[in-house]
Length: 368
Ligand SMILES: Cc1cc2nc3c(=O)[nH]c(=O)nc-3n(C[C@H](O)[C@H](O)[C@H](O)COP(=O)(O)O)c2cc1C
Image (cartoon, rainbow, N blue to C red):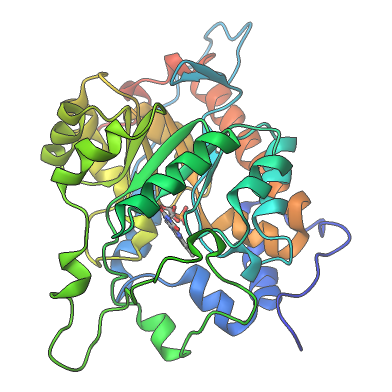
């Protein structure tokens, strides 16, 4: 049997929540791709906690409020979003569906959701932009070769991407035993096409031999010193992704980032770091509204979106669930995942007495 399996012609009626996609996605993806998309680092403590932290937070509804004219709109970087949910950057989507990122942006366009496209996309960023009718941001991994990085930025600008998202939490891949156990290899025909011509360092930490992480790999990793250079290379707003520490949040604002994404990379890099939602309040306290703060990791329900907004996020990003939708039903699956999450968010707003996103305040989280 060759993977990924073709899209189903229709979405099975029993799929009513994001997690309902998982068993079918597992079948469609096959062992290797399932391991790639789902694995976390080491014992997957952070991966689990990203999800469980949302369940620990309890909501305290208010009743009998005036809900006339309610809506889910937000303003982000000067633009109106229909609802505060975007698709997180995920690499190599042609491993999930033959059309990969093209199908993803088609589904997101139907749902008017913004998409962050990975540096490691498996389709050219120009072709993705041509297929999209929605807001696109380009996620950048800085390359050891500055000229190559500058070219990537230019290409994203010229193709119409509206912001850059610089991801800094993964100079190494982290130890992903889930991938090691299946001896993961990218399948033939799937590659980071936008990095062609750039020698790709093998970012898997070596667990044998002298140099595990130090040496060339970390020597080439960007530092705060490279940021000024990057910001001078683009007219686009640049958002920093992979922030967990309030000190780093402050540094980032001082340097001129236009926004932050609180993220632990979906629990894939360093295990036992806190759930992103658990550190969000400390970060939003330091940021104090100077730039928008987004959060990702573990968002599977509309109530999770509501909780993130209540703790100060301007918007959230969702990762793996849309890949599962993509693998099962292509663009339609991606749109369906977004539709479920948006509908749940709207219901959660209605039932907590929040007519607008601005009304979702800290008090909606129950304090014991
Ligand atoms: C398979 C996979 C590949 C990813 N690739 C990237 C990437 O290329 N760039 C990036 O910034 N983040 C990447 N991420 C992290 C996601 O953008 C996001 O932070 C995370 O998936 C959110 O958690 P969730 O999957 O629980 O929603 C990846 C995550 C997964 C699961």
